[in-house]
Image (cartoon, rainbow, N blue to C red; front, top):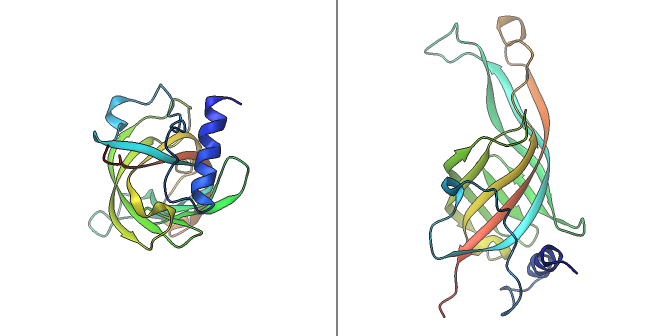
Length: 185
């Protein structure tokens, strides 16, 4: 079994009901190519990795203060979060928010962004958590990284008065790594 497999197994165990990663188990393997700007603050550790598959929703609109500036405006994500074995862990939706099946929800705020190495893909992000609800596996989350993105960029089709308020749902996938404060030694 590889270290990454062990890490994903540990993450799946967390979602299955464990409150913390067992002592001595390997950490979640964060890719080495993550830019330094996307690293969470010191004193945090990754504890859960989830694969997202869904859409990024865009609407063709013009701002009230610039009625001639038509553009695809991001409205929010809609994605299912799965674990290493394909089990559904929860969902990702506008806010940006993540909700685990065990009742916890966290809402984030973008702290940093970096271009995706995958051409035509939404950026990688570091998000800090601005609110928590519930007592499930995500309750301890302090930061979230969005990595390994594929797709999800605004439509390439023109946006203007002819298709005002048209909504487009663009497919995407990503890996979300959830971070928490390290336990006191």
